[in-house]
Image (cartoon, rainbow, N blue to C red; front, side):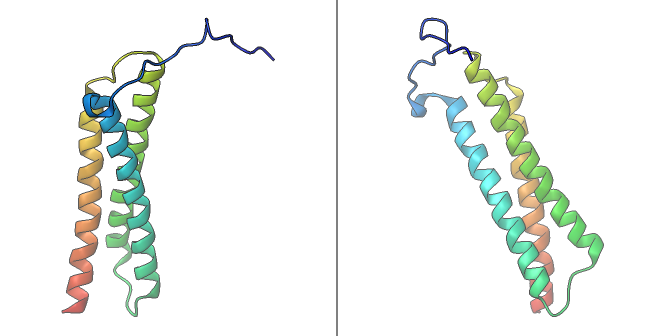
Length: 121
């Protein structure tokens, strides 16, 4: 087992989160991942306890949208961590990946709300 001494291990300079877009994007991606997991749990709970379940194809689209959003969020987090460890800024495409994660989360939540509101009416 080899323990690196402090002279050879990479160190990150202290960064003010207010002035580091990478860290702000990292935090936003963590938040989106948490939301994906919470919404997915809520969708599965509500559909499991409902008197009449939505059509399986519709439920599959909702779950797939939330799963894609979670996967994109994890990908964004991973890319930022790898870049920070290499002491480089995150690639420019990370913002687009985060935007796609937000779009898929919105699509999944929106589709579920449409189905749920239609059941109430």
